[in-house]
Image (cartoon, rainbow, N blue to C red):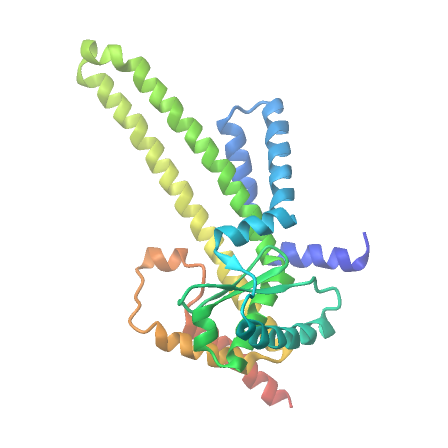
Length: 293
């Protein structure tokens, strides 16, 4: 393993350790649910490995694009505006990251103001973002998304989605087992009256509570990692030289989100930090840079 590959792996682990931790938890919970035997462990490992391979392949990226309504640039206006803009920032990044993978700029036909990175070669921007942001602001936003790909955040997200998928299979198995148990106990309902029904309700209640607690814990853990990744991607855009442009874009987003209020439980599960906190951190970086000149 060469030094570049080793550094990438360490950087990936450092920035996405909570994603990986929760993915491992999901894996072993699923293993226990389907039967904690070594044959099932091998089965889980094979399925997990194949799923990750497919998810990180061109096929997986194509599926992600399809699910998220992402398309290539078709119109002359889209190509003439977005391609030169993206190529400019891509070359700026490549000066500092020579091993940057090929990335294609795509579009989502939505009037919401958003941009996202997915897989390892795709950045998508909504038509709403193209129409709302200035050219410089859009560069800052796209640099932020490139940061997610460079840091491996999109890979971690895919790995976690696979873990969640396997866990969902485990949940379905348990629910089917509970349904079968209810059917088996059905003849006893008339004989024992409310006692058997009460026992069945208690079992379902305990399962639902455990499932809710496990899901909530996972969402909170993943949200913590996700928010840190957002800060890291902001710093990436600043490092490349587009911090001021990103700040301007965030101020605009802040104006558009006035009046939004989230309860505590919603804030705990939010994938993005409060916009004001992101702006504050970037402005702090600017002030430090100015003071060091």
